[in-house]
Image 1 (cartoon, rainbow, N blue to C red):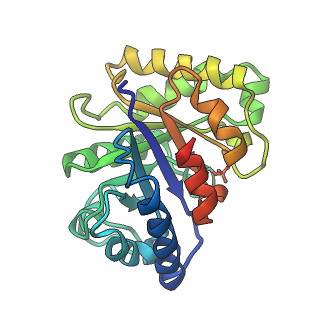
Image 2 (image 1 turned 90 degrees about the horizontal axis):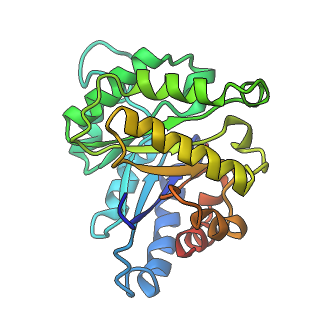
Image 3 (image 1 turned 90 degrees about the vertical axis):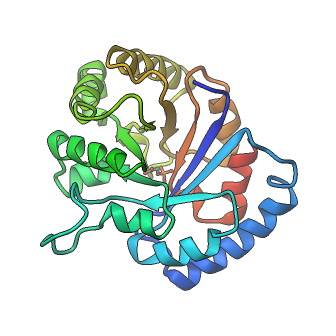
Length: 250
Ligand code: PGA
């Protein structure tokens, strides 16, 4: 993996269009003072707002190097699929990426690996980058099933993906998401090595591997030193411009 670090913000079901515009006004003014001004091409920033705020995001980020995408999409772009999000439309409004298989989608919305595989392939076919999420529950970790779970998620989720096209992976232990419980450096080190080895076994070793789960400005620096941690997927701490900016600066 290159030395470029990736910082992705997952806003979940937060921020309406007006709040989105307000956030970017502050974030971009802060970023242009330091981040963009120092031509920090070593980092790439993505925002994943909720669906109704995508248009406001697109307009706000139009003249900036910051990228955005949706938190989900369907595996087809058009048709009789009430309530779904079209990745083609995300692309049409300037989006670059789609989050696929976040643990909340897997758990609350019953998304299974086969559907996730179709979505990953669909997003790639449009020339967008899937941000493919994996991670084990606490119960799975405590019963020593981490390898088995991640291997299944990777093998099945990427079964229709193209390793010559772009793809980012986010490892997010489910028990660390939104809980304030951060995985220890030793756990992150061991699991990111495992994820890298598993990705290599299916020819996806070039994909960046992000860590996610209660990343905050006060733990991001240490986590970023760990081998095969190529950046972060950040939920709660990405909702405030200054706290997300502090993570990007790490
Ligand atoms: P968190 O969420 O940073 O609030 O733990 C991360 C995520 O769900 O992607």
